[in-house]
Length: 210
Image 1 (spheres, rainbow, N blue to C red):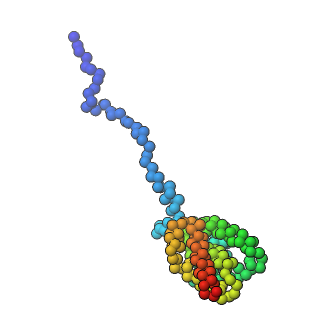
Image 2 (image 1 turned 135 degrees about the horizontal axis):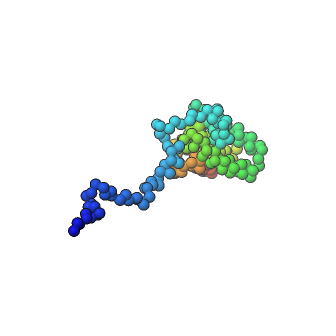
């Protein structure tokens, strides 16, 4: 009797191929990637070239024009101080146009528009707090002038105090400057500087000048 060889091959047979197993596990996804991609334009990096704002830049967008206060932010020297000075003639014009409630409504609108304009411009410049973004100084100092007693001496004193608080940023201004981001953060820290300025003016008027 002839015994036929088994058709079964041993596991060591070269013709036997291992089964290919498809992994059903999804690829790992770093949930932080999306956030990093969104924040990339705002992060300083030697590989990302930041735009240099000029007249063409501010004319190219309403948001840029507002954020740079019509071009005042292009000042090569102390743009924040220049913007605060520009608030003086703007205040005199607005005071002539609006009654007190209308002026306050204008300031509320200016603050809201400033959040949008500073946000858009900061993203375009890849710098949320670019030195040329000065609409926050203009709006905040207009608020200061609205509540400051009449007279050039009071207004000059208000100017010096506002610039002092805006530059040295005492607590909690510096805390909120670092904590809050985007257009709201840019506008809010100057609002705090305005509050401290008005607080000092109120103290001086009540306890010094009587």
